[in-house]
Length: 98
Image 1 (cartoon, one colour):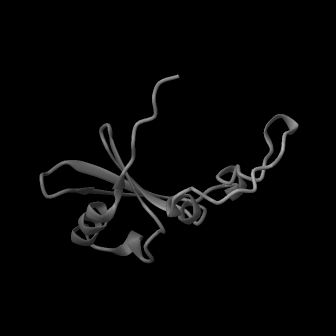
Image 2 (tube, rainbow, N blue to C red; image 1 turned 180 degrees about the horizontal axis):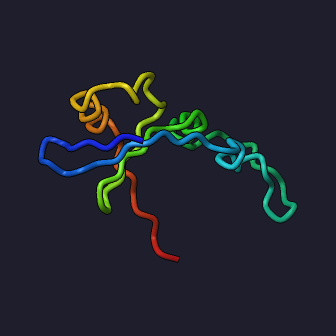
């Protein structure tokens, strides 16, 4: 885990996320309630495939971002390089409260 400040002085925390079970990200092969398994075209984005290999998570207050795949050597890079990785990371949309 790394802590750093962005160009505006906001403090961010970055850490690596490795899925424990990549099959949890792959629900397509599971047939709901014993029904037929979907065999049509894959309409998911590239993101779900790249997340299987893990991602670099960034968090500052209620702001979250994700960068996949995990960049090699990110733990040893400079704060300037961490800011560049943060700039490349995609914002994470908030899940609606259930």
